[in-house]
Amino acid sequence: VQDESFFDTIALKVPAGKSANQLGKDAAAAGLNIRIIDDETIGISVDESSTKADLDTLVKVLSGNSGSIDSDGYVEMDFGALSRTTKFLQHQVFNSHHSETQMMRYLTMLERKDITLRDSMIPLGSCTMKLNAASELMPVSWPEFANMHPFAPLDQAQGYMEMIESLNSWLASLTGFAAVSTQPNSGAAGEYAGLLCIKGYHEANGEGHRNVCLIPTSAHGTNPASAVLAGMKVVGVKNNAAGEVDIDDLRAKAEKHKDNLSAVMITYPSTYGAFEEKIKDLIQIVHDNGGQVYMDGANMNAQLGTCSPGGIGADVCHLNLHKTFAIPHGGGGPGVGSIGVARHLAPFLPGHSVVPVSGEGDNVQVKATGQVAAAPYGSAGILPISWMYIRMCGGEGLLRSSRTAILNANYMAKQLENYYNILFRNEHGMCAHEFIVDLRHLKEHGLSEDDVAKRLADYGFHAPTMSWPLHGAIMIEPTESESKAECDKLISALISIHGEIQDVIDGKVEAKASPLHNAPHTAAMVTASDWNFPYSRETAAFPAIWSKQNKFWPSVSRLDNVYGDRNLVCSCPTVEELME
Figure 1 (cartoon, helix red, strand yellow):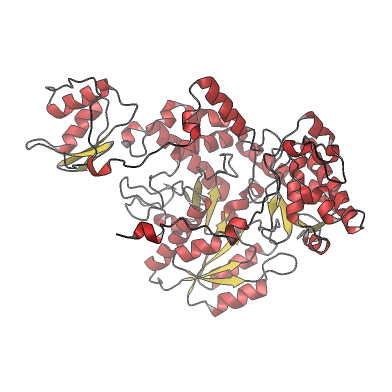
Figure 2 (cartoon, rainbow, N blue to C red; figure 1 turned 90 degrees about the vertical axis):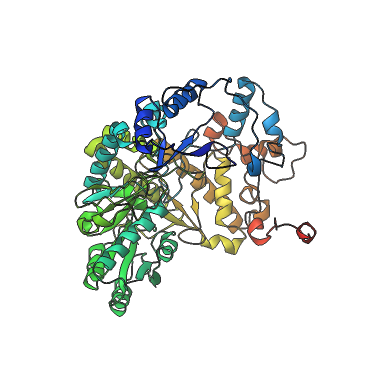
């Protein structure tokens, strides 16, 4: 044993006369996988699922079938420097639930605090909160997928590889690209990986000095950060009043930086919910000045079957499988930010230092460099979800989903246009798969977009995206998962809220006395003995018929959203604690 202190993983020096590779083969033949660190060293990891039988088998492999474990598998252990000296699991939640019944009820209580698709539409713009169907999720729990180690020998993962290869083949076809890698495990990681492909391409052509990245204000919010992380210099490009990229400004900056231009990052449709009508002109300008085109796939749900990034002329695009292709998301993950690339960028897809990979498709090159994730295939355990989604939808189903998403957004925008100012629609009055509602005028009357979002909770709806990409506005994306009836419910709620806004504007109600300002109304507020508001409890908590039939109760009322940002709390040690 090479380590004096260890927890669940140890490194063993192979005895003289034995080979680490041969021990690995012997272990595999016995049904175990061990890590081959080098010719003379192996690694072993165990966890709570490891049994005494597993350990007996392991000992026999390592000892040449001559050893076994005499104990019951439980031994007193001194972890040395790794021993914990502080208390842990002190919160009451870890000491309150001692049966499955209690645990079930506790988890259900937590579940009820969240508004989800189980309750109503989640209209978050640029988030594509579509249905994650049970049939798509089922394979994730199958042990054949769930229990596969990311570094398992490939000859034990042929079914997994077949699934990944077919999925990436479908994604390549849908995007019009030559090759796809699933390694990036978020949209931002996909952006970074795509930019590294572009950077590698320029370096291979002897133009490693190209480091300028043009980014329009209508691009997705993470684009500038990804460009900086990739070592590029960000140059902003204006948008015109219609929300489209200012072609003249783009041309001027592309020509100004033509000797150092690396890429442009565009989102299509844009984050304003609009199809750029001059997208091909934009791409041609960048190509003519030596740059590559990175297309952000955050809004790919509006392209499926209708158009494709490769067909439009982009060189690389990331795909949020946790948006467009039905993997659940929110709460930090997991996600998949697959990237598709044109043939000339395929050799620069991510590799991996432990398991050399290449991505799948035409002109890929297996390599051990350029990795952007800990595992060679990223969050492979959730890829069956997207595989199922695409397989069950087929080409016609994907086209229908995209068209339905666009139809739902335009239907809602049309129904709301007499009550709200809908921004960035084209000359035909149409948007893409999402639309922006202008609420900037509310500031003049003591209200804000926050009030609208929080009032929607009383109607049983999650808030739309707020103040992005336009401050003082909300962005709504219904997706194809919602029926006309559900769209009508949100429309009805927003029209009703407009009436409450108008009451404030007309002076009938002071802003601070309005249901808008005091929303959301919790069960504790509504059932309290005192009621000091000028409107009824029914208006507060049951403003719509459906809220009486299936009420979602917010857990808390109004919070100061930015208090934590403006009042930092220091968690660093005190001066006294630092004294020696």
